[in-house]
Image (cartoon, rainbow, N blue to C red; front, side, top):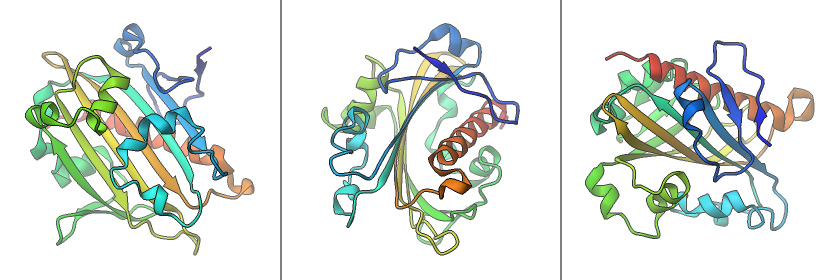
Length: 242
């Protein structure tokens, strides 16, 4: 059964938590601004990662397979978002994806800047760096059949997306002296539905060294903060006017 998530305090769109990564797109719900959301936190226990069907399907998104090189198993967050934006597929270009002004208009409180080495830096706690890789239509169709783009496509749709943006966040700063994230990899597939209408499918795998202690919210806080951040980004994107 599908469960309705309590909305955050800001004016969020309707959001529904799905019980499996391979959920079916609900066209009617999404056309009413609805956001479908799958979220799973895998505990750092022996064999927990290999026992998670969602992680098994998305582990290919971490092209460097960094989790296998960690000294101890991490907490892993696996998620999928699916929603519509009333923007043409041409809106989601490489130039816009790499534009710091656009990033800060959509991620308003992240304080994003571009560094001398061509990476990007987030000043919001926990501060981190990220890189972007953009795959246009030709690159999507030339991608290996067993690679990340094919895996994303097989979960989200029977069709290949028109473009894909891969973001890899690393170099997470400690918070109060405690290690936070190790790596977060997000693949956003953009599907052209009609002129002026695009579906976004967003898949993320995040490796966390530690969770907040129970008296600060524990794993529920991780979920609540991830949900709120995602919904704010979606609303800012929908409202963005070049």
